[in-house]
Length: 209
Image 1 (cartoon, rainbow, N blue to C red):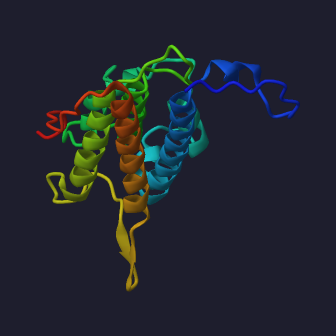
Image 2: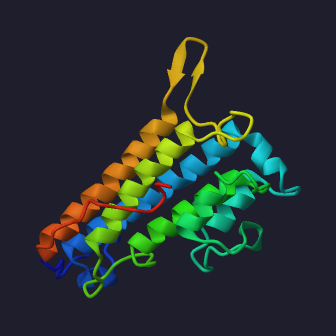
């Protein structure tokens, strides 16, 4: 159903909303929330793994976030060997990679989420999302969580630290962020699937190796 509000005098009303469907507005909201969660995740990863930022003298958490969430440029970086999406994320777990592993994970993750939303910053009536892309991204986040918690380097250390224990209290803040991200992508996939009446294929082969 299209959203059209005739005679609206509310100052918050935007003319462009007349060409948005309900699903478009849901997609806008979910993408905005995903971006907020990913920024929160990136900041927390750097604070938990300060050595990664130190690999790039002159960089700050703020500058790294700005580079990663700049919608005006593709997420292609020489320091990541120009790898994108899944390939960029996999650099984090490469023994030979000596660069910033937080940046590799986040550049890949943000690129994957952008791809699942067709690289669009917001949505209008004629924009169509693919529920399979959304579902695949949710499954890949699950795989990423597993790898972060289990993959270790040659010295048996995790490549990046996430959840931990502070004293006798478990810190599961990373788990909560990832859980919210997975839920958002699954919900969006379900909404789009309901509109298109297509079946989602839950078999994903991406970052499992």
